[in-house]
Length: 343
Image 1 (tube, rainbow, N blue to C red):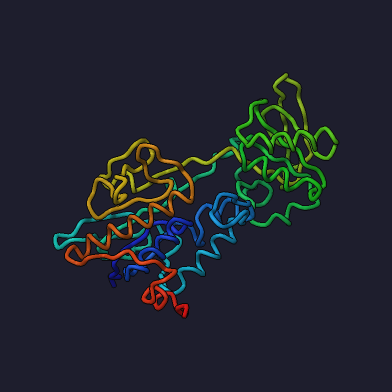
Image 2 (tube, rainbow, N blue to C red):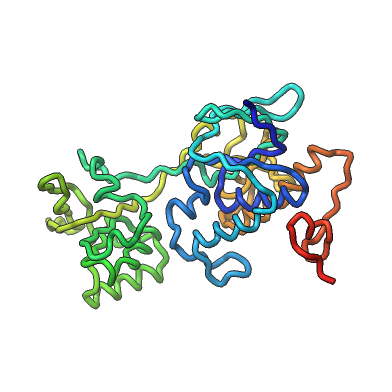
């Protein structure tokens, strides 16, 4: 059975969720598809506990809290989510609009498509040691789903970016022992985080080792230690219970790369009036798009989503004048949102 809708949004991260809101205000119904099994994109999958400081009106908001609030905000528009599936085919229809088919065989007929998939499907850069993959999600972790499971254990964090430093700092005082391993003295993380970790290491509350993990030792089906060679070629054997590897993420556009869209490296080129791609009727918002001056910020994606919604409304109803209405004062907006109009 083919699902019919006004708009299909590919990506259930913050920008995809806010896109539902902007479309809903213009009476456009949306279905949301995401390859992940959960709503929230990177915010939910990679760093649910990480604070975000540049969302207007929130001096600090946790990534998961932001997703929860966005879900609450779009509730009046009853979006339908299709999770754990990837859009494989996008076919223009002779009568206008598109046919979409996902990896689970779900079919959609939609008047417009909005790609809000971050920078594509992320794959963690893996720790390349022979046979270690069998310990993934047991002792080797590329994401932290439940921080408490690492408390009281000997934890080694690998990497020099924000994720590695953030989790290493969070584990100090909670894990029995924390060691951060990075291949050089040049970190990609925020300088304040690096300075804080160095201070804690100098105080003896954690350890910092500059070098590379070149092997591991196992006993009775468990990793017991890592073999590390320092940048000075000194050999180290570190006892370990859990390894948190944050070597970065490799973005994969996946099937999107085959849809005939104009690309700039791994990003989709759009205009800055409608945020439409090179294929009319397909739009892109958030980190996945490219235009001169592009900044990969959530708040930028929110702005792009608002303009894309108005462009789609005009695309679908070219003879209908679309008035800009303010949610603060518009009684029709209040009705859509299910709130009382101020007297």
